[in-house]
Image (cartoon, rainbow, N blue to C red; front, side):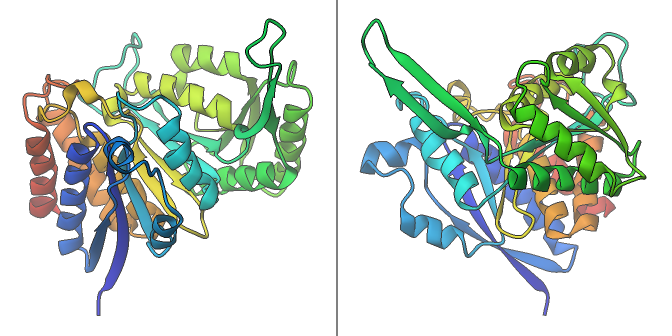
Amino acid sequence: MSKEYNIAVIPGDGTGPEVVAEGVKVLETVADISGFSFKFTYYRLGGDHYKATGEILSDETIESLATSDAICLGAIGHPDVRPGILEKGILLKLRFHFDQYVNLRPVKLYEGVDTPLKDKGPADIDFVVVRENTEGLYAGAGGYLKRGTPDEVAVQESINTRKGVERCLRYAFEYCRKRNRRKKLTLCGKTNVLTFAFDLWERAFYEVAKEYPDIETDYAHVDAICMWMVKNPEWFDVIVTDNMFGDIITDLAAMIQGGMGIAAGANINPDGVSMFEPIGGSAPKYTGKGIINPIAAISSAQLMLETLGEEKAASFIESAVIKVLRDDLKNVGAGKMGFTTGEVGDLVADYIQKNS
């Protein structure tokens, strides 16, 4: 009997359902030729559900999600819901509950995709960011004193534990070794100012590095990372960093690889339930127009397969994405592709069927 994967699907808000549909289409196509199958269970979470019911994410829904092999997420963010409510109540809650302590962001410029960097091409932009995903400033520690008065004080604390830092670092070292490209791991921090948090990160980094003599190690301040990511992206192989810095530099990285429409990401618990999503937001102004680029959602499905151990099937998706970006799409921007959202998904699926 073939393996069946139980995949939870959260289409989300705005254009989320449109791009998720194309990711599911491609997953079903690759499953048909790879000897396994999927059972998709849909969860209507997001702004519309919140507005209609007042519910963000129930305990019962979390219990149901826990039975899945992976979660496929569209996008969270609704123009009629105050920023932070859905993001904290769904995205962060899921990351923390399922202990998805690694945010994985491949940054790869494909042939046929424009980058804003002068004189840089696909050979120069091919690295991965490993971001710690459950600690740091996003842990939610802090509060107010004398709120609403002229003497108001707001404190937000960055929580970094040895356990949390070290397991993220070990994942990064292992990933760098498995990637087997330049075998260079760069720690991104701010040791000259954030002297407590990044002293822990730096000490742990070099202590763990002793167990990986085949991996070259490097350190750079976050501001330098941003500068060199623009000036010399070819210097990087794998970058590991904390939650906030990772959040910031991966948006910059998405731009140099061609834009949010093709940037995919994963929230990973290597021993539990992981969640896969396009990096771009819900883009409500494009909802229902069929012009949003689904490549990021399709590539996040590729990341899901890699994490599930179906690497050959994942390679089928990447080969198809490379072909479509190189030979078919006029541009990766919304409304500029020369195809509708569904047609782009069809192009990827058709290539997989005919060439895998």
